[in-house]
Length: 115
Image (cartoon, rainbow, N blue to C red; front, side):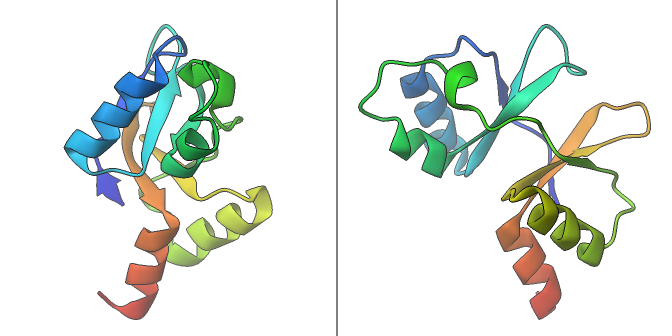
């Protein structure tokens, strides 16, 4: 898991989201509504690239629903959820439902490889 979660609102402009991704060197941003319990979707760098010629906001292209997992989930659990949901990112949430991190397919590969 990568600790911490970068977020934006559904009305965030794609250029601003791209700047966040570039600045923090991340491949996904979680799109939230009014509070941290209102996850709309996940916006990946690939989603952004696919929509680069359109004038849309983050909420329009974010992949939804958000697939979540708890910090105590195993790598096998994460891999199974990704496969079942055709998702490249899982939002890691606390028992209270608050975001604490994100797991990407690369995180799963690294853990499986023992890195």
